[in-house]
Figure (cartoon, one colour):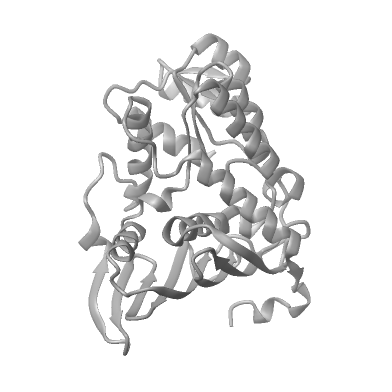
Length: 332
């Protein structure tokens, strides 16, 4: 799929890295790959690929229910892994990956790229500098225009995907909230089925952090206003506000006056490869390779990814179904 090709392209552009093999169940796709790159070996079985290519590391960008068997098989053979988010479709499988990695020493990173996003990184920096005082409340949401009819495939199967909007894009924001404000003490909320039968199209949550921050959370993959992923976060502190809107970040005083404003161009520090103004994908892959070479662990490590999966499952266990409200009220 697209994320596998994205990460493969990023890896091929890193000095000292060779992408030697690709794997997909689609024979048509693999034939196309072999014509594009004559040095690429193509496989339809991860066991055959690992046995034959003997890689130092693998990128796992398959549907979530396949993450654990591949990652565990690789880690048992001392092969490091970069796993696309979510780390798995269940917390049980996520913990199984973690236990295997701990036993074998395999290094594993997970694709929570917002931890490398320049705007999120700037917010992390300002919070660490106590820019707005003690944080009291947070309003956070993530949106994309993706699902507007009944669809099929693994994304819309609870058994294969683990969930809908919350587990697909919402988990990005949950991980970011954990990174910015620390672990959660409570989570509850509701889901809404606008078009999908088995999985939710929208999720609303109330989160309490262990440090006493109250969070209002919303995720939708059925918002027609945002063709690409769009995130908002308003952080209220005792002395002011941090407000993120997509690629911008404002620092406001207690009266709401804007003291400083940042846009992505202000925060951009460059990347060895920038795909469509999304340098965080390149940054996380570069850090993963550095990690394999002995540098500090990546920001998006396995422990935090398992925690995010456990948080999603805790949400689903308590969530009520608000589908009867209807699609007409979804974006009020």
